[in-house]
Length: 229
Image (cartoon, rainbow, N blue to C red):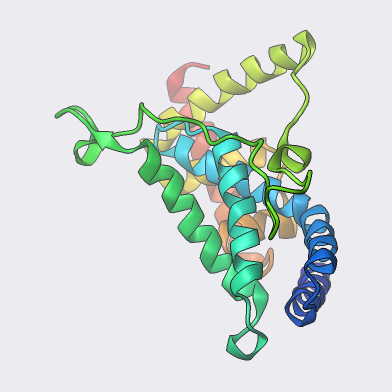
C-alpha cells in the first residue's frame, strides 16, 4: 500500500534527523514533530491493543496502552541507530514489548475459574502527566498533551453503551469462532478494504481475504439466527 510506505518513509526521515542532531533543544523539536505526526497511528495501535484484550474477555484501559506506546516511541528514538536497521522495525518491536508490559502490569494470580490461572483485575493507571524528553524536569511536553480525549457527552455515552452491547454479542460469537469474531468486530468498528487487511496482518485486501470475510459474515449471520436475535 503506497500510502503506508510513504508514511513510514517520513517517519524514517524524522528518526534519522533525531539521530543526527546533537543539540538537545533541537532534538526536543524533532521529538515533538514525531509525536504529532505519529499520534493517529499510536491511537489506532492502542485501540487495537484494547480490542485484542476484549476479544479475550479482558478490558484493559485504552489510556494505559496510549501511555506505554508513547513511552515506547521515545525509547525507540533514543536507542535508534540507522546502521542497525529501519526505525519502523525497531518501533514495531518496542510496541510489542509495550503491549505485553501493560498485560503484565494487570496480571495477578487468579482462581481456578480464570484461564491459565491468571487474572487481570488489579492495576494502577499510568499517569499521563509524566513529562517526556531528554530534559523531563524543564519542559512542558507531556503524554497528556497528545493522548487525552474529551469527556464524552450524554449522546456519546449512549453510543458507547450500544457498542458495548454489540461487543458482548461478538464476544459470544468469539467462543464459537475466534478468527471470524475478530473480523466481525473490526467490520463493526468501520474497518474495510486495505485498512481491514492491515489490522488483520495481511499486505492487501486480496481475493482470499475477501472470501474469508464473506465466510465470517455468513457464519455470524447463522450464529445470530440461532441466538434468536
